[in-house]
Length: 193
Image (cartoon, rainbow, N blue to C red; front, top):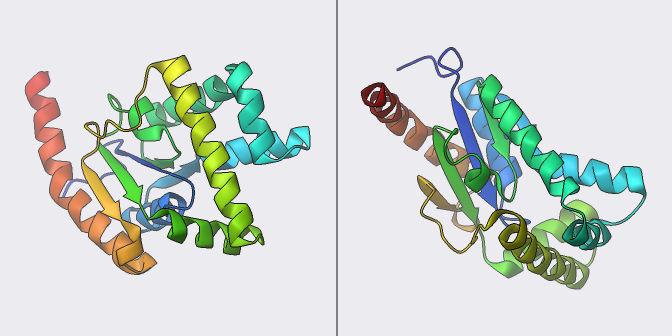
């Protein structure tokens, strides 16, 4: 097996709010001895700095592309450094030509709402409302700023339903698939040279 960090390996994990992308990304980073960077945390930090909710920042971002551009340029810079697992809603699409492996996490809406409610100390109804507002805003922004259709999943190597597995099982499945695909990705890159 190739030393992934030495090879500058990059894993991009995308998914909707509450789909398990952050948990999976952290676990994969730990298992494969890679750095971990969260685009969602950057978005949350911006909201906190401005003292507004994530929902409000999503609305601001619909009119101010600099917010998404800052997050996405950070993802690109971190990916260029290599040896990293990045997670974010758009990360797989933004890093489609840089990341070696792109993973999409999935979970049904109700499961995602329950996860966010637990994480953020909200009711499930509040989490459902927040998810719907954020997702509608993101679909509009991503199409407007990047011409990305988030329903097109062609860029992903792995699509993982995290509601079917424990956190440990999801990480084990993803890590094993990465170990299988990594040498194939490197061979493909060598042929391009």
